[in-house]
Image (cartoon, rainbow, N blue to C red; front, side):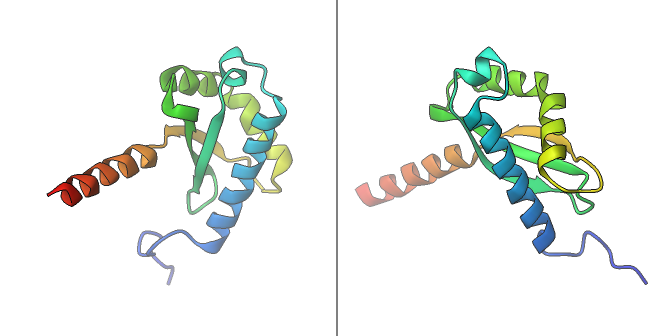
Length: 125
C-alpha cells in the first residue's frame, strides 16, 4: 500500500538537499554575471530559499532584490530568463529531469519587519 504524499509533516531530506544545490547553482550564476539581462545585472538579488515538490519536478524559488526595490522589474526579468536558468540548473544538478522553475517574491523579510514593529510597540507600553 502506498503512502499518501500529503501526510508528511514537511520536506524530505532529499527535497532539502536538491533545493540547496539549486539555490547555490543559481546564486553562482548571478554572482558571475552569466545572465545577460540589464535588470538582473543592475540588481543584487538574494535567493533565500528553493522549495522542491515531492517528485523534484518543480522548484519554487524565493527571491528578493537588495533593499526590496524594483521587485516587479526583477521578477519580470527572471521570468524572461526562465528558460536559460532552467538549462543552467540542468547542467549544474544531476537529476533525471530538469525541474520546472517558478519565481516568487520572498515575503519573509516583510513578515520579519512586521514582527519587529509589533514587538517594539509592545515594549513601548
